[in-house]
Amino acid sequence: MKAFITGITGQDGYYLSKHLLESGFEVHGTIRRSSSFNTSRIDGLIAEFGKSDQLKLYYSDLLDSSSLNNLINNIEPDQIYNLAAQSHVAVSFKNPLYTTQTSTVGPLTLLEAVKNSKKEIKYYQASSSEMYGGIDSSVLSETSVFNPKSPYAVGKVFAHEMTKVYRESYDLFCVNGILFNHESPARGETFVTRKITRAVGRIFHGIQKNLTLGNLEAKRDWGFAGDYVKGMKLMLEHDHPDDWVLATGETHTVQEFVEAAFGEVGLNWKDHVLTSDKYHRPNEVEHLLGDPSKAKKLLKWKPELDFKGLVKVMVESDIELAEQESVLISKKLMKPTWEYPITD
Ligand code: NAP
Ligand code: G4F
Image (cartoon, rainbow, N blue to C red; front, side):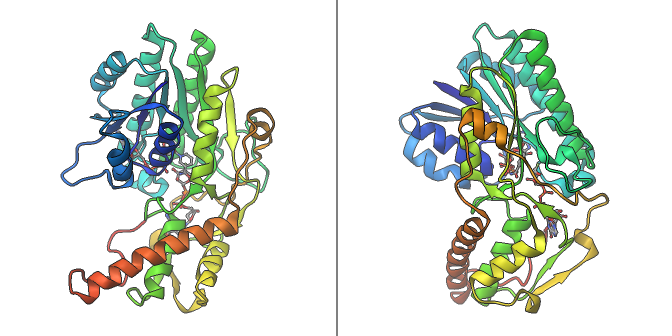
């Protein structure tokens, strides 16, 4: 089996490609040309699977339709996972055109390639719980109404609906995975959970003092990315294409995550956490809680790691990382920074 993955260098790209490679898949992934290396998450996989060509990487971009078409024509994958996106909601308010261009033109290019291919290709679209807008405390399922509140979410609704249009119009195996927030030690450092656990690790080792956050009241249904990518594969293995919610069915405030993370190392979060309007969004998604019963029943999928377990794994990993940083700082190979200069 051959899988083609956009966004392979991201959090989910890492966990999904690892899962597929270990299941015997040949994995083809797109990376972006950048002036510095951007493959750190998958370097271990490149070392393990690159030599035998079980893992192959290509330069491309969601806005470069011709390279995506050429790659799909040449590779002839059995499956496409479209994970690539400008995935930061706050940044989408600052870069709305870029964010929505990538999340509309990119998926449409891929869906056209699937439609025009002589081979039957199964397509996975990374849809998001952000599409719901979180306007009240209801439990959200595949049939809940969308109320997008950011340029990011509007772009995701477009891709979601277009995936359905291609599925229904051309009888293609195109699925939407409506994933609620999922995190891990490989989570980008500007998403709130990782921003918190990075700070906890650094504060614990005395190389950071404070952590400044925005809205502590927002609620999210947080799961573990390693569990969620397994659901993506199951969706493409199901007997028919559909839309699927993956979530834990539990929601927590940002403050609860903060308390749990500082609690892991015996610190009182109130001694370190500040808040600033700088991290508030023009429009906030206040409450997200998903109902994964359809995926549980029909895909036999279930999240393995719970909230406490997730916080623990992330804090432990970031304590180790901060320990390495503190050694570099003590040898004057790295300078201490009290807070990262660019965060969101
Ligand atoms: P991520 O860590 O931010 O990774 C995004 C990936 O997309 C990276 O590989 C990035 O490349 C790539 N990318 C960004 N812009 C691109 C472009 N113009 N062309 C090609 N590649 C581009 O995101 P993630 O957490 O793994 O999420 C994966 C997907 O699921 C995203 O579409 C996200 O919107 C969606 N999603 C995520 C969650 C969640 O909680 N994690 C929930 C629901 C949906 P670089 O490494 O070069 O930046
Ligand atoms: O961690 P976040 O930035 O994730 P957000 O906005 O929920 O989006 C993530 O999950 C979506 C699925 O629902 C994905 F589609 C999307 O790609 C991304 O992976 O923020 C979570 C909450 C927000 O309410 C935010 O306002 O945390 C709040 N928050 C409070 N202080 C903060 C901060 N968020 C960030 N990033 N940084 C802060 O300092």
